[in-house]
Image (cartoon, rainbow, N blue to C red; front, top):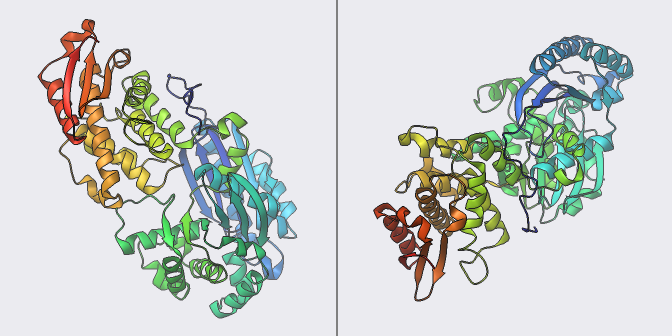
Length: 507
């Protein structure tokens, strides 16, 4: 990444609220998601799903189920009213496998457009795969592998690398379709899946790479694995399983009965019928390839479609830093101060100073932008509030260790002696954990010097000196800022770096 003028174009006023809605008419569910705007990292402000089962029976009867049509039309009328109530001026609607394959699909789409009050784009298999892959790229910019989007009627697979889309295909392997074709038999479904996957060359490209899993069924599998392993961070995006973990879990779930699944708290009861077949697809897919592991993407077709509508400048911007900047604009006392904090910490990191990779610099800047978001809380709760806000935020473009690093850095900025961090620190190795403490100590010094107001830090020098010293230099006009608290923070920071703190006035 080119760090020159990385924040050029950032606006300091709070982000404007310009809701945009997406309606996704799938083979199993009809969903409305309203986002806070057409932005690089949109946040969902409303999300509702109705399981209509439109695709149930399409594989054997060739038609959309009448009961499903009735439920879908009712849901779309409600979605129209909700989108209007929320103030979404743009509603983008798509329909997938069931609508495009059923003989009565065109008639249904006509009724659906009337109910929703806008046009509905019936996606081809290639378009569905493309949008799903764009969603993965939007949420995981460094993705390298194959994205797989499992809907009720189909499975879309597409190869992605370096932010670009490569080969993509659609396979008739959605859980509803498999239930129809197999007559509800898992053994028969396995034969159907194996026959289709054996002819799929794209899986050969997965050797040593990651399979990016998109879709509610696979998200439920990940939730189940989190519960089994007592994972401390309940965030599905970028949750990773090894190949063996994913195969073991999906193989187990594939052989559970719907009644058994309904008893598992982490599994959505509405998916108990289709879950075994969706799990079986994943287990057989991994059997037919040599993927290194599975990573969950909560971004899919809906987010990919919105991502495609962004101008290239926004598409190429950093998803994480864009989100963190939005947080700073909403919650910090002064967003300008957080940008100054980025520059101020530059004095200590880089060539000839404290070593830092590009990824570490990116996380440092993100932490700077988030460093003041807890100030409105009671002082006793600022650390915990910040920890929760950051660890649970709808950030994308960051893996779980990176997310925990940001959360703990700001946690320690408010609570210098804190060590627990809700058990999240077990997701970091000692070196990264020490870096979080170090960066937090730098922040603690910065904030007692600047009082979180802009215009101060650019006049104050903090640099590595000779003979293992850490020099804090205040100009004469700011000499009155020196005091016991400043010296104490400087000494503590220097000690963390194995240096001696030295406060100087003037040059």
